[in-house]
Amino acid sequence: AAAALAGAAAAAALPYDTVLLDRRIAAHPAAALHGLREAAGERLSAVALIEPAERRSVDDLRVAGFDGYLVRPVRRRSLVRLLGDAATVAGAFHIDPHDAGKPAARPSRRAATVLRVLVAEDDEISALLARAVIEAAGHEVTEVRDGSAAVAAVTAGDVACDVAFLDLHMPGLDGLEAAARIRAHERVAGRPRLPIIALTADALPATCRATRIAGIDSVLEKPVAPEALRAVLSDLSARHEAR
Image (cartoon, rainbow, N blue to C red; front, side, top):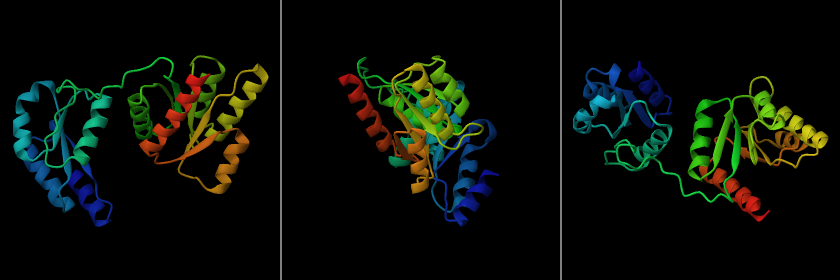
């Protein structure tokens, strides 16, 4: 099934960049990898998922042509870091960062500049990537999956946050309405204005006008570039420290 998908993607001129191959479903990983690359018509970056006891077979994976491995249960930061390395550093065999004793370390934190970040995003992959960038910058993250949860987290005071990132298109209560309700609560409760950043693939002028009306401070276009997210966090952190 994976080979069929890889072939179809290549035929549509939308080839995959990397494959994560679960060792449990590949009795012969070398043959499975060969079939995937043959179907794709080009060399896919390939990372094997293995059990802890299979570390002894790592050399076999290297010989088979894999670009690296991750040990199950996969750590979030190890996944993000190794996939990035495998996609950008060709010709090397990348070991699980945790095994290397270098698990996607956070930069040292300075309490005065650490932000408490709320991310409201229903897409798990987008949320994962946002969390990876935010935590790598030394900040704390709370995730929710819809607008109602975001409003509840802010207005009930269950989550202390310094900035909220809201996806505009979430099930139930969308990001626009969530922002409007947060602003209404601030006015009634006399609370300070929370910086709210919209996340959306729809950055058309009409959408941007709607975000301003809802009380959203700025918009980041999806897929969000890590550099853009880091720049926003850096600016907010500097302002927070200056208070």
